[in-house]
Length: 198
Image (cartoon, rainbow, N blue to C red; front, side, top):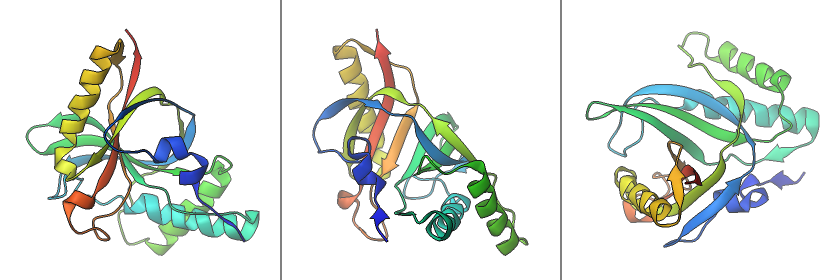
């Protein structure tokens, strides 16, 4: 059975070269979403793991393989940084893209499987949500996650110089994982913000 890689299906959304800002229209995409609030770890990512998202998606993968003859790879972890509270605490939304044909029935079956397996644990709330990002600018950040603000500033300056206004919060797409790339210079993150013509 073919394993579908949505990084290739949505190549312009999940792949890009370095050292340039791209203006891109993001198509509406479906995500499994988890809201969060808390401090950041040494990586610059939330201390509270988003395990409920990826474990639920793993169950969705099992269901779609068995019932829909459709296999797909896990997509990159994404975070929308909504608001900073104090020095280290943030309100944020974590998510991972899933195929468009995933409906509530499939999601609910996957969620119930997780609730049964982890019935003695406090399972974070998740939801299936279609998100329209629209017109965006983005740039590939190479380096530590705590330094992505430098790339965000590049985007803000690009917007000002090219007749755009930033209207959305910073979204980060983590293209690889520190466990596979132990040195920060190998970490790759797409930093993206929604814009409109000013």
